[in-house]
Length: 61
Image (tube, rainbow, N blue to C red; front, side):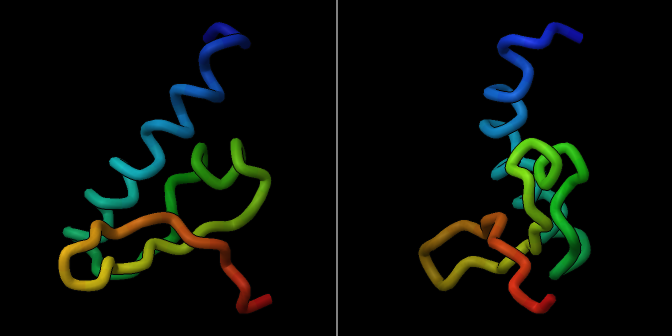
């Protein structure tokens, strides 16, 4: 893996990964790479009508 474009690519993929997980499991933790890159835990939040599911900060801790 290259050190340069990797983090940026992961950030871009985060939304896609989250969307796919949401479709399958309703509400799950975002992919590890998503949380690791952003430096925070993430939850997959189902989007409101007309909006896509997205990674959100886990504020339960």
